[in-house]
Length: 115
Length: 109
Image (cartoon, rainbow over all chains, first blue to last red; front, top):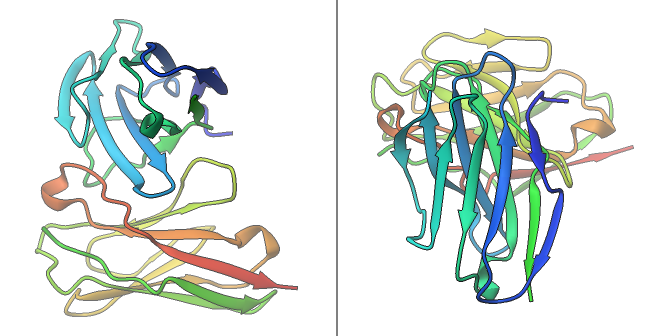
């Protein structure tokens, strides 16, 4: 158990809909990362937050947005969903948000299925 | 940006050592080398990381070549639980992780 929690575990929805994925980091960790894992693209970095502020952006679509709240939990919002958005979404957390040296602790993931 | 090259798959017998190679010939002087693994149906899990000298922890050892253009993750005694995809990662400029395709390790009982 990494200490990172993600809800829900599974989500099934229809094209065009909007969903919110939630992540609670490990106690004491200030930085949160979001990743998407699909069969054809592998594990891709989406976005990183540190203490409520966006720190780095990866291959995140404009239809996706995220935020980190004062209590440090984070939410990833996916809108206008398409079939290709079906994937596993992982959240990770680390203490200082220093990618070069921090250890990232990953949650169990949310499996999103878009029908 | 430093790119990594790993074999797609490897096999090992249970209780034998496993050496997982990674080439990163364009590594810069400040790039740390990270290894993560992903067991089936789970999120990635940290294994080890290092900069220049060899590193050891309870899970594995990391051997870094003197010119830093390659590294090897060493699992000293493979168990069935070590069957996973192993990723060698060099975050470019310390900005973000690129996981690549990794090496799928099969452990044979």
